Each structure stands twice: as structure tokens, then as C-alpha cells.
Amino acid sequence: MNIIRLLPIIFSFLILSAHFSRAGSPLLTIIFLLLPLLLFIKKLWVARLIRVVLIIGAVEWIRALITYVSQRQSIGEPYIRLVIILGIVALFTGLSSLVFKNKTLKELYKL
Image (cartoon, rainbow, N blue to C red; front, side, top):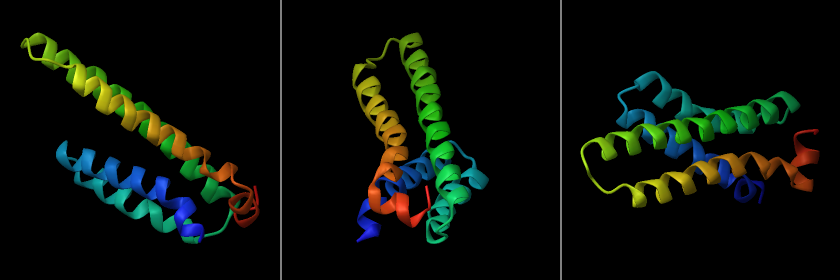
């Protein structure tokens, strides 16, 4: 049942992997595809690393949001839908780091 609790993290990493794949960064694509495998190691450092990476991932989504909106504005294309979608993805990624606040996962990862 812990896998269900960890799904937001896994999903966030998969979306980040797709983002970096589209951006043409194969190394980051592979790293984000492999990061969920760390969740099998039930150690404190894993939980902390995952949290930090998710926060950095949320910041990356915000950076991408600003970049893409700027590009769209410069060519006169609509950008509101882009802001909404990437804003939600950034929020979801950042909030995924709170999964370790769950009592069961706190005990499992010795937080």
C-alpha cells in the first residue's frame, strides 16, 4: 500500500523526465526516470534527497513557465492556458514533497 502513497512522487519524476526529454537533455531524462528506484531504499537520506529534488523540479517548472510565456508573448500567441497547466504541474511537483509527512512513510523512512 505504500506504493500508492508514493505515486505523486513517481508521477512527478515521470513528468519531469518527459520535460527534459522534450528539451533534448538525455542525461536528465534518464536521471529522472531512475530516481523513483531510490524509493526502495528505506533511509532518511533518500527521503531528504527526494524532497530536495522535487522542490528543484518545481522551480524548474516555474522557470520553464516563465520562458515559454515569454516566447509566446513575443510572437503574439495566447499563453493563459500554458500558465494554468504549468502552474498546476509546478504546484503538484512541489506538493509531492509533502508525501513524506504521512505517518506511515515517516516511520518507514525514519523521519
